[in-house]
Length: 108
Image 1 (cartoon, rainbow, N blue to C red):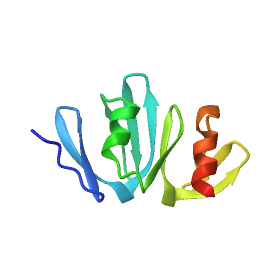
Image 2: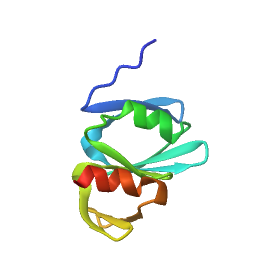
Image 3: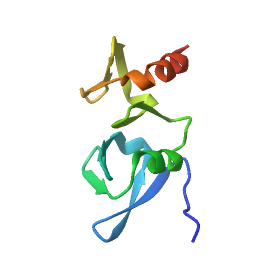
């Protein structure tokens, strides 16, 4: 069965259920070995999936990978200072060395 995704939401499987997550509600996505944790406004959803696969499901014009362990929505960036990104919710996340050029290219 083809995964049905749009720019507005995605479905992920967690706890034997399929969760529909509005992309606008995603604060950031954290990679944890074979799992990812999707941080949203109201909950944290743990999904058996890797960062590469979830990134393919997300609209590329709205999300950017900033670290091997973090994917963030571009519209939630508040401040970029040095190798840190502060999100609108107050979270401070590092920019990984591998992703610095990607972030700087995206900014220019």
